[in-house]
Amino acid sequence: MPVPPPKKSGRGRLLVLAIIAVVVILVAAGIIGAVAVNNNNTQRASATATAIAQTQLTATSAVNTNLTATAAAVTTTYPFSNNLVLNDPLSNNSKGFKWDEATPSSSQGGCTFQGQSYHVSEPQTGFFNYCIASGTNFANFTYEVEMMIAKGDAGGLIFRANTSGQNPSFYYFRLNQDGTYNFFLYVDSSGTNARTLAHGNAKGFNTGLNQTNLISIVAKGSTLSLYINKQLLTSVTDSTYTSGQIGLAADYINGATEVVYTNAKVWKLS
Image (cartoon, rainbow, N blue to C red; front, side, top):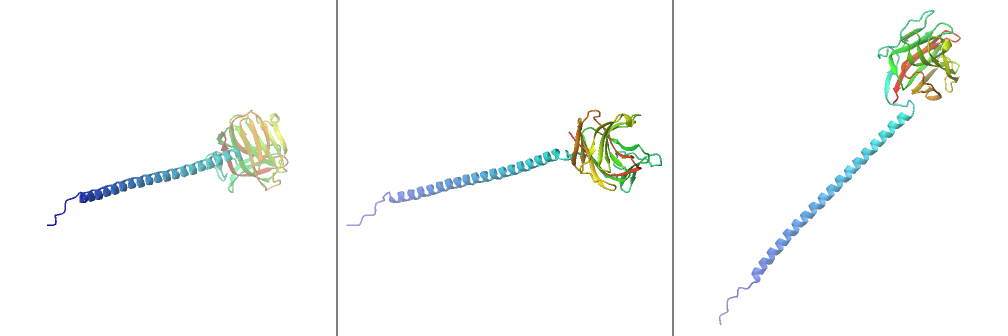
């Protein structure tokens, strides 16, 4: 009998469908995998960005903390401020602080700029000469200057001064070349009315002529502190004067005196 033709069965169709199903599954798996990879990459990138941001924030915070700590350290140690409002080498009068200038004579003290420094002199026994920076006016501050006694006896700092009238008033921190000190309150031009607020031996002071010392005062409210070479000498409380000019002095005790000053600085205190 003739061989019958093959019957058309569903195997070929099923194979095609199976292949299509496999392709669909693979495509779907690829899409899902791609989405998963993308999600992983996004999460990884987000985590990395977060870590970097956190690191930067931590670093910034550390820098800010260090800056704050540094600023705090500056304001709690000498000179107790980082707000420098006067920085004058005292080589001339070009800074605008209007230091007195007066030529010395046999009877009159001098206030002169010589050799890149400021010279204050007093030729008369029993008197002292003060030279004021009339362009200044400070209330709470640290005031320092380098002082060298070239001849004679003593020099020092004038502060919270008012010298515009007939009766000048000020505080006067005097350093003697023998290593003693006096702290005076002047209410007029007469020494008999002056009051001594403190006196004693100036520990840490380089005694003798032609010796350089860094002398300074810290005035904050009624608390007035005296310093020698950045070391506290003593503190007193007095509220007579609250603000005024600064100045420098030469004091004739046993002989005609000339004092040389350089590098005056003032830091404003809050």
